[in-house]
Image 1 (cartoon, rainbow, N blue to C red):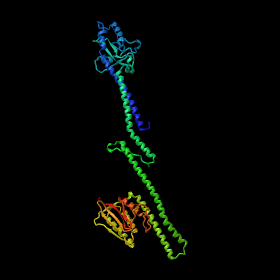
Image 2: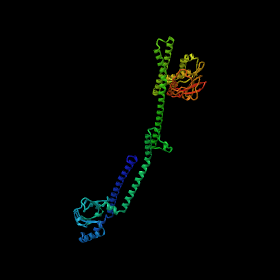
Image 3: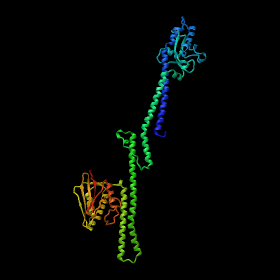
Image 4: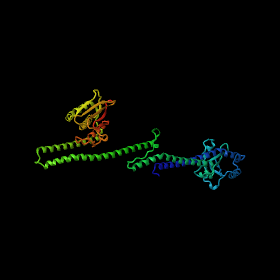
Amino acid sequence: MLRSLYGKLALVWLLLFCAVGILYTLLTVFTTGMYQQEVNQKLNRGLARNIVADQLLSSQGEVSPYALKELFHLLMVVNPSIEMYLLDAHGVIINFSAPPDKIKRSTVSLAPIHSFLAQGDAFPILGDDPRDISRTKVFSASAIPLSGQPTGYLYIVLGGEEYDSVVDMLRRSYILRLSLWTALTGLLFALLAGLFLFNMLTRRLTKLALSMETFARNDFSDGVLVHQNDLIPDQQSDEIDRLRTTFHQMMQRILQQVATLKQTDVLRRELVANVSHDLRTPLASLHGYLETLLMKEGTLTREEHKNFLDIALKQSERLRELVGELFELARLDSRESCIQREECSIAELVQDVCQKFQLTVANKGITLNSSFPNDLPFVVADIGLIERALENILQNAARYTPAGGTITVSLSPKPSSVRVCVSDTGCGIEADDLPYIFDRFYKANRQDRSGGAGLGLAITKRIIELNGSTIRAESTPNVGTVISFELPTAHS
C-alpha cells in the first residue's frame, strides 16, 4: 500500500498529525502549567505579608518562636502543599516546615524575592526550591520586619513536591484533561477526514493509472472504454482532469497510428505482390525473346530477327516505365517537407502541357482542346509536380479515348481557388471501379490499350495531396470520364 500515492500521502498525513498532536500536547501542558503558576502566585501574592503581619511577629516586632511553631503545624494540617521557610537577611534557611531529610539547600537566592517584593506584574516569578538544588517554583515572600531594613524573610513555596510531575497536574486538573481529550478527538477527526479526502482526490489518479496499465497490457492496440461522465468541461477541470483528457487523446492518436500502420503494412504487402507480378511479366517476355534470338541465331530471317528485337525493346521500355513510376511514387511519399510552392499562372502551364501532347493525340485521331478565361488569378503550387500530374491525367485520357474522340482541359475560377478539369469521351469507368481508380496497381475492368502498370493516377493523387487539394473522378460508361482538382489562389 505504501507504494501507492494514497499510501504515501496517508503516511505523511499520519506522521504530521502525530507531530502536531505531540507538539500541541506539550505546548498545552507547558502553557497550562505556567498559567496555573501565574494565577497561584497572584492569588497568594499577599499570603506571606499577611502571615507576618498577623501571626508571626511579636509585639516587639520580632519573630515569635511559639507563633512560628504553631503556624508550621497549622499549615501542615490545612494545606500540606505549602512549604514555609524562615530566612535570614542573607537568604540562609533558619527554620522550615518541611521534613528535615527533604531539604537539599541551605540558602535561597534573594534576587527573585527582591523582584517579588518590588510589586511588579511580570508573573510568574520563580524562586529556589529548597527541596531540589536545580528546581525553581512560584512563591510568596515578605520581609521581616515589614518596614525598614529587613532582618529576615518569610519564604513560602506555593507548590509542594507532589505538584512537581505533569501526571499529577493532569490528575488534579479536570479542565486540562478535558482540553487534552478534546484536542486529541479533534486531531483524530481531522486525521480521518484528511485520509478520506486524500482517497477522494487520488481515486481519479488510481483509475487513470489503471486505464494506462490496461492500455499497455493490450499492447497499445485496444482502447480503454471512456464514459461520458468522465469527460469534464475545460472550465470545470483541474490538473487531474486535464491529464486524463490528454491521455485519452493520446490513446486515440496511438490507436489511429496503429490502425494506419496496419493498413500501410497491408498496402505494402499488396504493393510487393503487385510489383512482383507486373515486373515478372515483362521480364519473362524479355527473357524469352532474347533466349529465342540466341537459340535460333542464323536461322531467323531479317524480318523475324527485327520483329523479336522490337518486342523485346517494348518489354524493356515497359519495364523501365514501371520501375520509374515506382521510384517516383516512393520519392513523392517521402518529400512532404520538400514541396516547393510558388505563385504561377495555371493557364500558361495548361497551355504548355497541351502543346506537348498535341502531336501524340493527333497521331491517335483524338482532338485535344483547352478552355479557360483570360483573367485567371495566379495559383500557389509546385509547378513541376502539377505539370507531372496533368501529363499523367492526359496520358490516361488518351489511353482510353478512341479515335475520333475529344479530350478537353478547362479552367474555371472559384472564390479562393481555380478548378482544373480534364474530360474525355472515352469508354468510361464502371461505377464499381470508380472509387478505386486512384489506388496503386488498380486496373479497372476496361480494355487497356497500353499495358499500364496502374501507378499513373496514384502518382497524380499523391501530387495533388502534397499541394493541399483533393482529386475527384466522375464517369459514365461509354460516355466519358471527368477528372478534376482545385488549386488555391495566391491571395486566398
